[in-house]
Length: 297
Image (cartoon, rainbow, N blue to C red):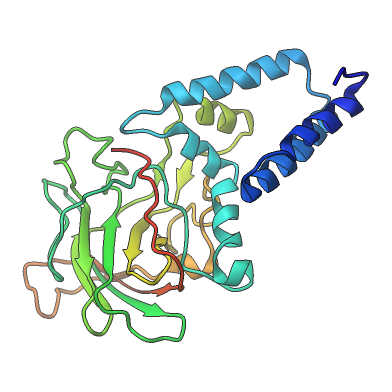
């Protein structure tokens, strides 16, 4: 088709998208072209801006490595990751959900740890945190034999993939729920941290006068056949950035109570005050059990 004007251009492009054989891909591509062309008209995108946009996409690809994923970081910083999560969980966005962002730091093959064990594998000074978790179905029944992959940043705000002073797989471990759906572990209390700002995302935050901080949180990825994989983050309600998460990840259902204790642990004298405890219940929804693609190695 020889194009006469910009209106015919959109019509011609949509006609090609409509020929996509896969029904879901057809739906996505038709809608993408409609909204993308409308966006370009709305802002009257200039040729220079289009070239700059292409350069930005290229730069994000170049910045992504085995230990950093700039594209995932950008998706979170634009609220896209949270929106997709909320629309696809909690009865398609109608109820609260303990599902959350995967984030850019999940890794495959973290080591298995027995319940009650620790995920601290290198010298990591910080206050002790005891986590007591429970995994239930939507009816409130315990789920036994669920694999719970736990990871979090250190007390200085770095994941071990970012920090050469930490042992590989430090502050990571997999646990298995017992007959009551429970798992428990020892670790150190994490803190909030700034996301990496030495790339495209950092320039965007600077242009928008936004801070780069995420509130302190504990990651979990829960797997049990017959249920949708649960990806969750539990946030510390006392963190100063709990209301302004740069990745828009905090929801009411994900705010946890990290309780401070200023007396010795009643049964473990080696745990000196202050120490913290977190009790949290994770809810699984029925569905296909499909692991996400790990953003880093």
